[in-house]
Image (cartoon, rainbow, N blue to C red; front, side, top):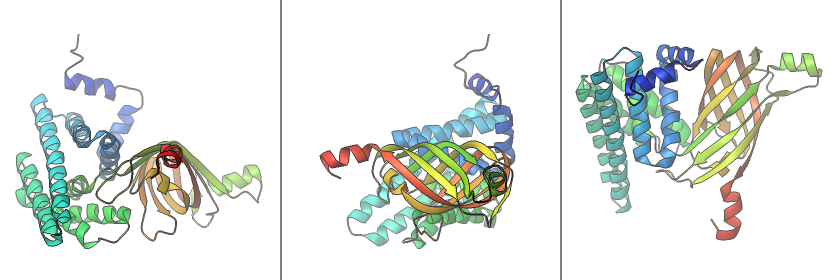
Length: 332
């Protein structure tokens, strides 16, 4: 009988759940999905604090090593390095914030960039990689965050991740590894939305409902938020998003699945109108949201579910949150 507390056996139980094998194969063969999935998991776990976020990241790292055929020693080593890296990035972020509060903005920026580079170097070296590649990924990612200050944080996140990937390639490494390093250095756990989504191309909707039909889908789920380096407030709530009116970019087949999205701000800030662009390649894809007139993405999401679809749509999002109940009583 297998020991249920042995980490490899727990991974095997998870992998053998119907459908998880296909999902695991997709994640391991699509590097963008690994980056997005890790970011979403970190945001969600981060609701319970930096230790939980680091633990979730370590568990995902160990699982990926197990899927790649690593030994028990390999799994535990990779998970330990991942946990230490996440906590070190959190320490650097807290240190930079503390320095900034003293009025020494230049010192805070230098501490952030140098600290991230040092963590990236140490993490890469401990994993058997190249110190320079790790330092470039984390350092360039942090420098990009500083250089894009004033940009909407979601667009800033995307640029930071891309810069980290480019930094890794400049050092001779892999883009995905650098992107993950930069993402972990940036994430401060702002808002996570997760829920179910149904998208229908307008040609099919009009075939069923008539030529005046403009709807393209709905998304319903739960959202969490809490303060990070850019603000926001702790909150939890439900959201409903209606999509429609975007027949200029709308081809393919219906999509039904789950969404895991990250953005910055707080739950109440999700309200309003916007635009969404989504692509699904058959079993998953990406969504980019532009909320309330933003010119760069205000949210990035990972979708998991069947459907081959390229779609652009206008959105209207309604939110009901705990803050809606408590703010009239206790104030903001």
